[in-house]
Length: 446
Image (cartoon, rainbow, N blue to C red; front, side):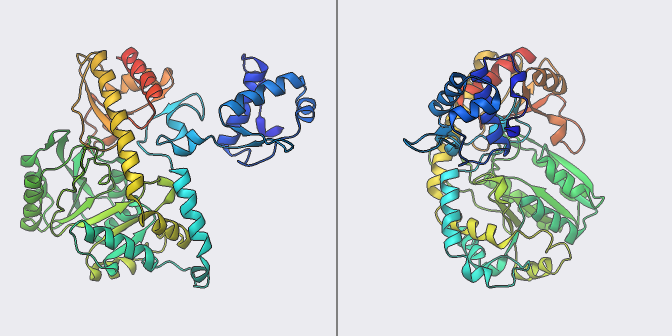
């Protein structure tokens, strides 16, 4: 009973408080899913409450799918079906505590699909377990699956052109450690963890502006000239955080600038699968770019599988780097990823459909609330709206929203030069009823 914590401290009725405590203990990992609960009489005696209180609490949990009871058997705790099918993690809906945490725009794991892939991986893991298990460029099956996806999209790729890493951040960290650039081009705004990865070696960052409508090509030209002989990091596909999609003409310009100024072009494609158009069509890739991919946004960040697509000779050099082993994921995770990538499209179709609906719902709420306090462009893909506030600083809105139970990320977090004081990222990963609450909090905060 210690796993429930101080559940009586709430002012709620005892049965409601007990149900909340059981649910919180399951979400926190203090109670394992599938665990049997004591009989109602024993549980009531242990907790010092009436049996009626326990019965009412279990009825609440059973109705919501958190407890399963079979005739003649003990009740067991479980995650409800809605939690197994969700896009938003529990932390982004307020179900894991009092805070709706939107500081990261990330999906929850597709539990049913993920668990089935894990079961298939376990059933055929024998040959993998018979190997040494030491870090390498990635298991052959996963490298082959990743290479096949590139080839199907028109970028012919062999497995030896793939290096599997422990996520996209690990991929960028390894590339930064290998090239050791003195100067790096980054977008303003950009993915905040990428800024940390590039700053670690003491690299000077040169920025170019991005808005939802697109990239400032004049600034890109100046930035590439300043970074001559060094490195550029760009997110052209449903850019994080703006959701912008770089046009084919702009991509050709970037490729030309990279060649002209001898800049190593690193393209992060983590968001590429999140095209929310009615008929997604992949945009042609930039010629000569080193490509970073990941399962973090399309499947789940906890899978910790990323990769680098480059020439086979560069892959061999990266694999020989002292950091490569430390940035390599466990073989079993790789096998699960191979299973998932083998039949990813049905999952992507479902997720795109739900995200499109949620994007449009939040957009409509914010337009109705009044665009005199913010402006935004509907992004063609990605996981968030990028708001420009017209009346209030973003840090002020973040502080006020936090007091009302919604944690957000302000623009300066995404800017290499600490600008974007009036910008705010608002993910639309939560379900509609939570988006309603988020919109109301934003309305008050502004």
